[in-house]
Length: 152
Image (cartoon, rainbow, N blue to C red; front, side):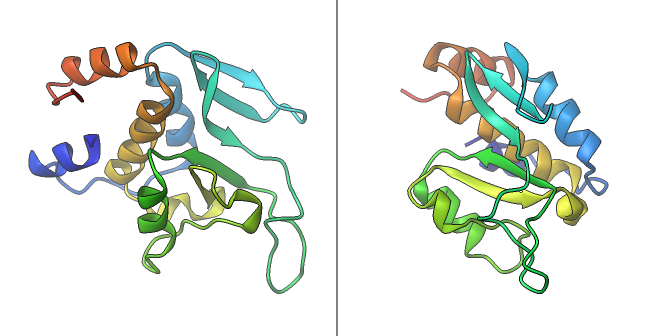
């Protein structure tokens, strides 16, 4: 939704994204609170609903060579299963999922691979994550403020 509108407006390719950008973009969305996970990992929420979550190492996301859990996985909510599949099935993207997230509307991205996205792509990802979790009223208000069409 916001992604397509931004592309339609011809947003130029931006610089490579950073993990600091993930934090800044998530905190910059309206009505956001930051909760602390079990290892002081940030969990960005809107209306008490997580939309970007820095995970702690878990056995479901491991390095295929060493078998060690990835220490740097970020979870982003997405609007639909179709959106998730579009991101994880495209080999050109750094996104992935695990069986643990089957049926869950989210994608995973290692912090060490955030730089494979440009700032525009990361901005769209964070905005879409926020939109997927915000209340209808908040989402419509934000879309209107951006000059983007809302949902009926």
